[in-house]
Image (tube, rainbow, N blue to C red):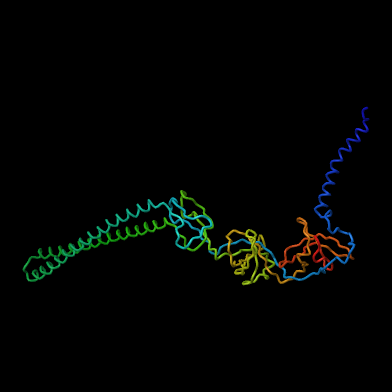
Length: 391
């Protein structure tokens, strides 16, 4: 017998709603299970204990004052950061370091192609030998011209004496004068040639020094003990004075640069001690405020604080850290022991004692150090909680 249309429609509507109802019920059961409502020995909110004497040690929740802090995010920098750039244009033939390598002052970092430079030095040395030979030849010419002048001077003196005695004609005496003047001109010319040869030799020598310096520039050395922060070039690249090949930093001179809002300008003091955390390393450090830049960024309304980093093992430039700047004001907080907190997955709760009843309260807390937690929500001063509740 076939079903009536009304019964068929009713079953269809029932089937349409049964799926969502089952899903919601399963989700509620899962949440109750995670919250511990089906676990043996758990404290269910709003249920009285049969034996109130089992409440155990209790704590009175109270507010306490602690120094307030301003947290700001900064970036690790090096006070001594050096860019290694070639001083000449040449092909890079070898780079001997990689990022993270430790180097000493004088260590070879990279080598440039020096074939053209070596050939230039050899050519300059050949030119210097030729220039020195020209100087030597000019010296001989000066020596010869001086000898000619000495002889002409003696002839002129002798002819003058003879002319005064009417022993020679005026013509002979004039010839002696002319010969002496020609000898003087010859010596002057020889000296000029010698000066030109010497100047040429000096210029060639300067060229050799420059060529040798250029040859020295083909080897790039570390100027300090440092760590290779970045390697920005590879063998085969063309190096030039505008290209940074390597970036070095001194790990002993790291600092944290932190932008701090301008309203706290009077809270930060030079030489004050601060704490900061570096999430990448999961470590906390101490530092000293070394510099406060006396200018406020008009866009962010912050001023820059530079903190000298102490015991900076593992830190490298570019990491970020969170700094805690102590303020002059106190903050009222609730501090409870770690043992008073029940953890269920990611949830935190405490057991409150209310008129002999044990009630579970969800809370949120952060670490306060020394086995204590700072409650940031879920508790108020005046409440009473168990000191060591059963989980």
